[in-house]
Image (cartoon, rainbow, N blue to C red; front, side, top):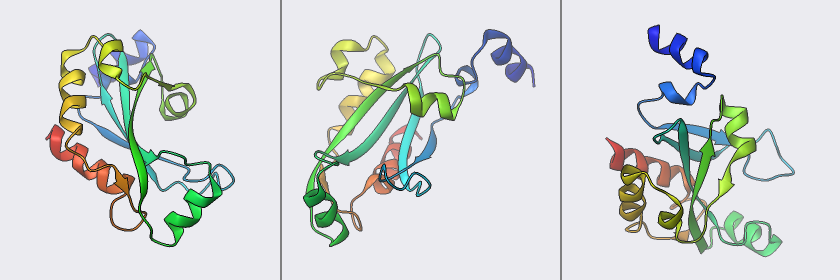
Length: 145
């Protein structure tokens, strides 16, 4: 209870998160209520958080979307998104900023830099049914436990 009050006093709920959590976001922009995309949020230092997700490289392409639906592999990418001072899930999903392709240069938090290095062992070939963002979220939770 004390931590919740302290977080509210400080103006952020992210500060009280000690373990990673999974946000469920829309898979397709034209189906906003189909929230099956998993994003792992990890608390960093200085009231910031980082979102890690695994997504197709060309996710807006109709060809990529059809390939995924038909069970084909497509190139994927692990994104690291910095969330400064977000107060809740809606703020987090609305305010994330994609970092550079080598995000370690933009991050000063040693814990997050090590975590980014550990994610490099993940195979980035995406398959909607056998190797997707939900599998990546389980992989991330394993790294963090």
